[in-house]
Image (cartoon, rainbow over all chains, first blue to last red; front, side, top):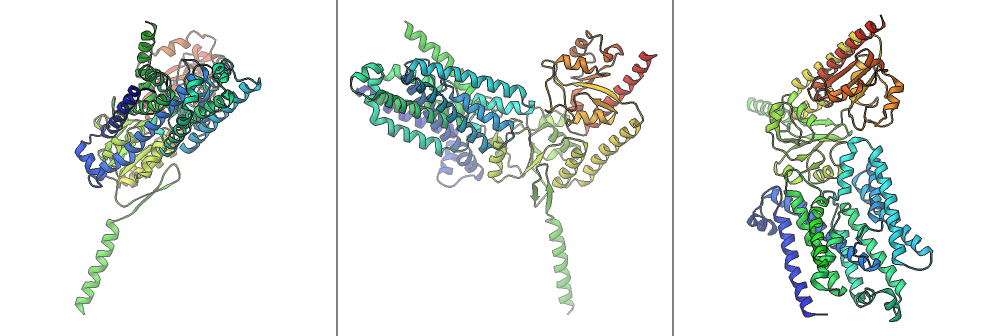
Length: 324
Length: 300
């Protein structure tokens, strides 16, 4: 583990703090840093208090945790499937969640039911892929990937079907959900708890993950219980993605882009990469959400649009850099 | 002694006066919830174009401190600050206006965002007008909330009487089968629960897709050709001969095409549940009257 890597990791901490601060201070209503400081001291305008503490703070915290979860889940999926194009949704998890959420939206259920059925949909999808991939007995990345991709297109068809038959007045809400939007975030406790829990579980496993990234044969020959570790990685990544999708819909590109960018900076040491993913993914999503709230204010954009707009050119640039 | 009586009288007067000035307002909204205001609403935010329009109709448009995009009628509504679009609300912008009442569109606004506003202590009136009776009820409720009762009653009476006289003058006319097109590609219409279907009923028009399951079903052209309606109506943005109308003329086997019963209705008069829906219904009735004439001419 290099000292240089740790130095880079320390750079990410102020970046994260800066992102959180920006998210708190920028919004469709102007609040100066002085006024915000007064609010944090328990004084200040009651309106500013409500805006900062009840609207912006929970949303910014939820955005940070969701971004962190997606980035780590993406890094784990890329490791598990040995495929650079893997992202948290590649195995159809977001499709399952979306099917659940749209069913709830279609039946006119309340916000809590939408989140709940999204979570159930994600779990159903996870267990389906897990069960189907295990059916053959051996845990083969290619088989897992194929199972997930086929299941994802199945969910995609379900989603299109529901969009086609749903009343037109429900459509905007459904589309916003599919694009990923933090306006629906119900709380930040669950994603933060999941993020910290996963980091705690993964940190002692860092060495095993590093061995695994060289290939499962090599890891097995070094005496590692490969199927067990791979199963754990899959379940953790699925849990993180399920929580993220439940809170904010399927936000694209954070889980694909952030691990790649950080690998270029930090190398392949998972012990550095995963915490760095948490910090960088969180910061990116907070900044993207701030843009989504303010770019066309008072018009609000879904954050998935912004992450994709940033993500697509950045990813293409990264790819072309690697080619040369 | 006289002082005692004077004091009692003064007290009684004060009590009646204070209880009168703090007249509590209690209104039940479309969600069946009761809204309680201590004073008539002074700073209102409307979260749908039809609510903005209805507030202007009862003379309380000047109380609006914020509204959503597409609130374009009456013209004065264009100057009201925007707080997002109906399906993506700018919660910060709404709070910053310090509203004392929010008029929400139950099926249009995102439920989770409305819940958030309610959790922050804001009063929300839910609107969901599906027929003429709902619209007049909404006028009266908005009138109570803004203490514009008299103007609200005038508006409600105008709508009720206007519709009643249309029903009476069309009671003896022959029923017509009507197809109402709300969208060209994909072809979409309305079912019997839609306000436009009630407009058709008022003029003795029978919506051929009244029994469809969804409020705005997508249908194929085959089922329309099979139903062979006597009249085809559709929305326009003011142009007299919209493109969809010309497209139907290719189907010369349709009764409606043979008799020339293709009519464009000004969309903004029929799609919003407001007082303008009366003008929209009158326009539809006029088209259907003309259609009856043209059908009997074609039969001769």
